[in-house]
Length: 270
Image (tube, rainbow, N blue to C red; front, side, top):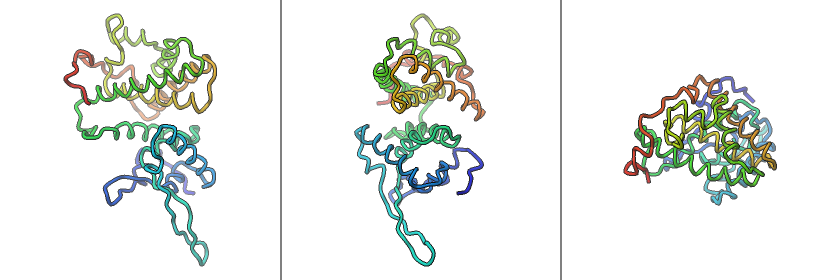
């Protein structure tokens, strides 16, 4: 297998295919090489876990994992090998279930998570939205993500949700709690910090939320102590990833001049 020497988002774009109907897809065998799996047997185990995750999410896995056969030459003859045509969502589930210790897997988790969220837009293209529209859209995703994360945390034995969420903020914001963030932003008492974030800052928090939710489930966390540590470490890992990519730290991102409440419901994306 050729070693992947440059870990940039282009390595996932370079193996993307466009079907006759204009829909993008990836081949599992090609994704396997990019994610540095040398054996199909091991990577197929990851695919099976991803398919199960798809089923548990009440999605039709056949819409995202289309089994196909490929003919390959072995010596003087040909034989058929198993492959899959994967949707972007399928790739997202695969990297979620891959070995997160690999740098390229961590990059894939960021790439497919962000892109999958953006692709959930139906009639509007994310890139064509105004900054305020992006804020409204991502804020809804954060609300939905926090709802799921709260349910998972409670199942893990968390009693104090405020402390649990502060653990994630402390990891992502270099020790700052929700109150610290609010004070730095100059917010009034009880004003929602998430309503006073730009789309980039919201996206960083969305990634923290979704990744923590998945890890709590995958690692079968059962105590409040372990759940808070998991949330803190996930926030810190994402912070380190942003730093390694030359990105702006979340606390250095600008606070919008108007909160989402001040923008009003007339700007909501439905």
